[in-house]
Length: 601
View 1: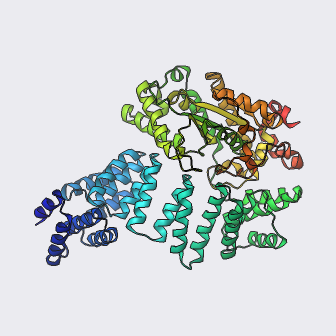
View 2: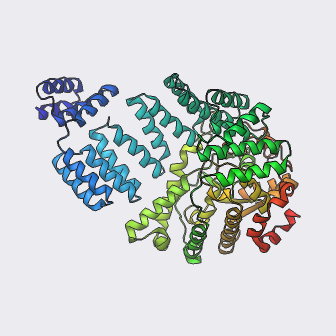
View 3: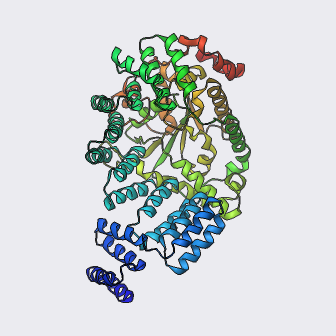
């Protein structure tokens, strides 16, 4: 009977195949494979809900469930090789068995081989396209391998198969994460509808909407939406922080009282109370009450439940990069790349002026601003996988073995995987500009890799004096990725490690990185902007000086600041609290302080 069905599928007669399968399942209601084929046919006919229901029903009749239970036992013991053997045996018994596919893909992901996982899951989904477990894993696998557009497409497919708050929320989160703000605003309306009267879900959506409105420069809508979130959930500290992080929102005495209560609310998580302290400190700072503000900032940072920040590990990583990227390694570069677009990497430390540099550059007619792309990190993973395949060792041990063609492939992969971020999101058009920015500040780690795989890339290091930079980091609540910022000693040690690594790149590849000093940019904006544009290779345009008039999207904590003209408000702020920064000064050390004395005295 299944052979007849397969023939119907081959000739494209899916309606008849579906009818035949329904009739067969009336006689054999527990037939696992017939359910899977029916689900596949329904999916291909666009009957997603029906396909999902049949797929879920099939799982109840899985004849290999005992095999999967054995896999689970192996996985709990981290016995991946044994689990893989069982999964492969399952595939011999049942082609593309979903649970076996899931196992092999999971092992590939755990082994840091997301591209392999992509391939395995693609095969599984050909046979079980309505399997939500496989699709969810494929979305994660695409993210891990840097296929961000494909990850978003998978999230959208999940919504089509099963429209629920959870699937739409997943889609919403990816749109926010990867800067697809036009679509995000539309999908948030759908999420609000699906949230119904659930206050927690409504607050979640309003929080994301507030972030989206801030990014696109709709300040009034941003404030209004954050306030809606707070009205529904007064304990939602992230919405309070959203208002505080606008830098110029005026809090009422009542607001201050609510936040003081939140800092003392033992029913809130440690992190939530920490964020409330950050907001309360911002309020005191807005009134120039620096003494109170710093005491509260200290409470905020000391109470933040950050994972153990391993500064020694960071220093070891940087030392490894220095030992890896020898002159001989750096001499061999990619030589076969798409030359139509050139990336401009804006690197440094957070809170050093990178958003201002991006806004200046993105105001030029030939330069498109993107965001803090995750792409380069994904490319380093890809390079590591390549080295494991070639030499059975990691990137740092085998980078010398990569050929010029392989480096070119990696460089092209960066351009291809980052293409999602290079659409002009203001006009929703691709403007085909010659240059684009990538302002992930921590890409300073990857200068050697950039030099090898993207020889025509431009690298700009924006640097701010360590006292203002350190204080600004200490005052900022970061959603993720900046764990060192919650301790003044760690900030200083990370700053020193950063400038030490940058000194190494400057010595190895002189002139490869243009350095802009924040204080000089503020002091002589037109001169420094002309120097920057000349380094990029474009003509001076007045719009770059008037960058604050730009309507482009801005995602970072400096979004409101870069919508103002260049000013010196951020210079010398540390002097207001000098007595509170002895820990920072001591950890920075005499050498670093003397190096930047010109900008701190």
